[in-house]
Length: 513
Image (cartoon, rainbow, N blue to C red; front, side, top):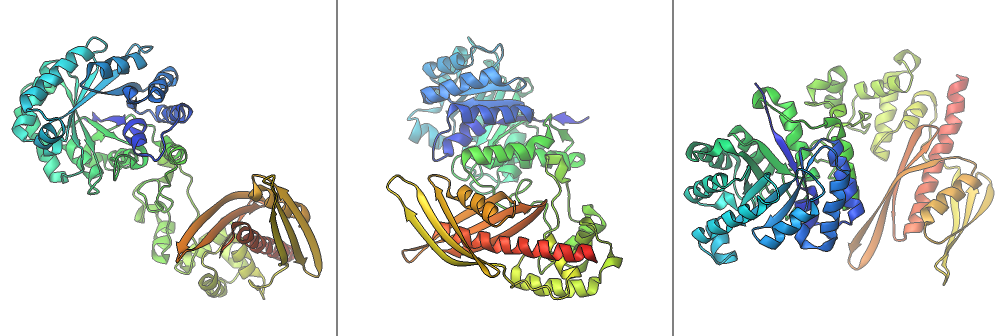
């Protein structure tokens, strides 16, 4: 019979305390709502004693969360415990999470006490917490480096005094999976009353072992895993919950566990956390990274077209992600080109695949990524000229007024005619530029995404701009590098409008055929 693993999320506590700027109440509530919809079992909403803002956030989260158990952190100090309980007092059921260092290093150098004094502090704090709730979790901080005899001793004592969840943290990400598994196994063998509490683990990622340690711990008997969305947290972060959840789901036959998580909310929740916390998700991040379900190699693309299981161990829709199109580059094979042509509505009998693929490779070597409008033109236009331009920038002047407004004067050559554009904007120059181009050049587009990256070298700053624009349900992409943001953006937009013009012209020719 499969056992349930409890998922404890500490994004709003351990994750938040690692950010450059604290989150406000509104931001924390948004994340808490997303976690609740994802059906996280326990949400550690904050550390109420740490600031009035954190206290208020915990109070507000208690009002809106419907399914998850709310938990607050407290040191083994009476005031901490009272404030934590007060922040959650509107709830009938809540958890207080106590913590205290148990390793020799923490006891002697940080707390300036001995092991007996630590035990006494722990028991005293448990008695105080029990006045407010029976759901008490206790973390043996730095358990990964705690003497195993002393760890067994304190765990037994904590359970005896009413702790319902014992957390064994690898606080500094020091242990390795086989080592951490042994610690949990020894606790189960040597602590006589261990069956009366849930054993939890909270692993940090300093050596990149947080997820591995967490999985090895549940194999040894732990029933709760603590972590954060996208792995944010102190130093190198915490165990990434999306990785743990999907590992349990994907390897369910081997692990024989399950969670109550709504998997289809994983991607959306990770994006919310990323946006609010201003932490970008690496493109190669497991489960939720941009490349997690992307295939560029021709061999891989061919394998995925034939059977997705050849190169995918999970389905994108399981995390709430729509399947992405194959990324067409010079590494792509004929199978990927043929598949994409089929997806945009062209059967192989309507074009010559061999000739198309030859042209495709030539263009991909020059351009990088190939889009649908490129494929159509390569397949059906005899003399498709990528370099041919309809719009050319002839003159550009940028002025800044004292009022804070920016005035941009443009002269654009449209085939044989010069068009003058004047853009006047205060805050959103990008919006103003797009609006003006749509109006003057009579092409209605929608800006979907743009990125600006700054680079410093030898006291010189350069800017790289990537833009995705949509026109008639087709995406057009270009990038450019320069020294001025507005100038570089305008040049990139002109490149895209040239591609759109070519697409319009070529589409008419294709339709006539």
